[in-house]
Length: 230
Image 1: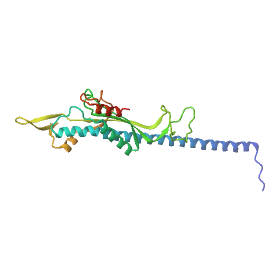
Image 2 (image 1 turned 180 degrees about the horizontal axis):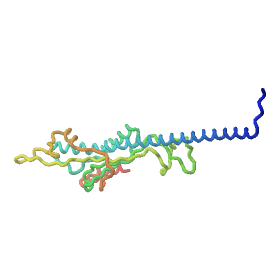
Image 3 (image 1 turned 90 degrees about the vertical axis):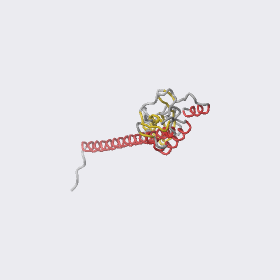
Image 4 (image 1 turned 60 degrees about the horizontal axis):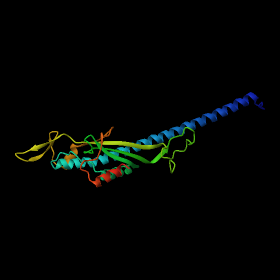
């Protein structure tokens, strides 16, 4: 039994359905690629923030250890908690351990720049992704960074974090004549490790009002501080 040849109307309907199917397929691919970029960007942001948090906490840990050492020696720490060179080294190490590179670090405080108990770091992940350009100059499938990006180009995978060292309220324990120890919030300081446990190191949202620059700083300290902000 012979089939009748398709009419012109049927041919046009078939072509329309084919074009519609192709259009839907391309739209789905475009949406899929967009979600790939968004997912990759979110992952980079998350990785960068984790690296920044770790780097900031590590650098602030230097100030925490110096404060703990002072408490263990029956001294209440009032100044010079942070060491720029050691802080930078610790931040670089933990940033690298988390797949990032330390870009900037600085210490501050609310004690006229003498304490240095707040540390801010900026990191950039080793993996990055340029954002799409409004003029369509970057293809959606291009998720990598250029080898040499412009200074003002937008990269996903940069993050900053601020860590603060909080030393508890401490008082001297006085014997008949001499100082015999310290109590911090009513608890006698027993050792260096015990003092570490009494000091809180936490992430915070804001820096101190004063850039860390202790009054008794020497030229070596000033040079080291300058290196951490360049």
